Length: 551
Image (tube, rainbow, N blue to C red; front, top):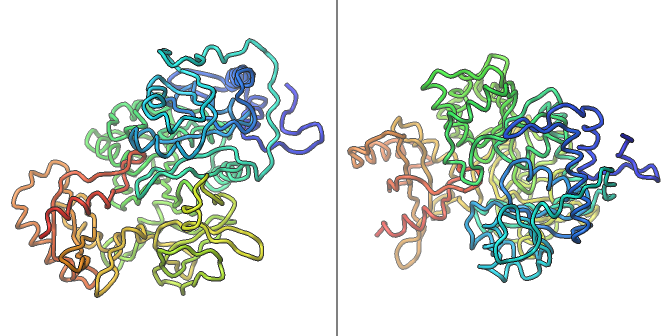
């Protein structure tokens, strides 16, 4: 097969699907996908070409905004690369956020096409306002009354290579939605350069390489693994509802296919650690684990390390849909830190920024900041708002001017864009970043500002506390904010003597200057969490629940 990266003029084509073409040239018989079915890189390349011709035939071509709503698996991988190859704009959203929320978010995309399972097309019929611009529909599975194409209609019989659409670095190639865990889900514009940079960071800083076998619990990162020549094992779990996973099945995936690396949320890591330590399971093939989506405690990292060999490493990078990855730190470094006091009392260390990533701390504000000249940068070790810029940082949300005004700061001289992470933290003298929680979750009282991570750390040391969540509740006619601590007990705890437990927790809180103003403890049971990672506590919902129980 001839080389595919350069076009006739000799310019390098940055189309993401060219990574697949290059891997198919280098490793044609190597498995690209090992589970749930085995597909070699050459077979994957051939299928992508066939579907690219089919997409073009039905009118899905360059700049066609196309919503893809199908479960992880071979079809997901093939169609994603085929859409990128023809130059369509790929639109992905997390169905776990709920039908109505998802439909409202998609309405702003003004999509041209929808490829989805029957439930996706039922969603289109139930919420027509969100899909009124859709002209082309394709059904994976049984097509009922809505018409359009079936997936087999898209598969061409052509055997030749489909020439990938030429994409410039600044071209929009995808719209990926945020999880919506701390506000409305927003469509993040991904450019060619942004995706290419993410792939390069995975190779250079996290050592992704073709020798690896990757257990995929998050489909988008699975695509990046394919671009770097890894063999992919799709985790035997419902990625839309990860809390339902059976850890025994995930362990079987790892052991049977000898997976060498895994990306997962702390919730998944916790489930695997509890199961593995209980059953004395070992996972010697795993050499690299990356966990993100929410802070991972040292207790969790240490617990999971018991399942691994001595030379394995766990990484806890920092980032968001709008900017990922930004920093890197290994569990071995975190576990070696000699804390002067309680874990996370001074925030969660998320490591040093990667090369080319600029991180600053500015004064906390809930107002838009149009120009970088209007942002007040704080000294080292002072807690403020985290802002970032770099090659993996998005410049805008799609069709959301108010969100852009709130989250983006422009440098007038060079038109660089800083993204406001919506988080608070501080920078150390050595450049390490410490995370203190979400900006919107801080509790501002008459006396002080309370940040979630350090305050919750004070109470999380109690052996009966699985996790806690600080929320602010307006009380009285003045609507003065009252700090309230919600507590989730350890799994298996009977919930006995909650009054006595609350008294013990209040005594702990009163002994620390950070938490002495917290005088109310509530026990809501299970915490509401985000659908994507099942790890981010939805404190807004907890605050509403707490408000109904505070006089």
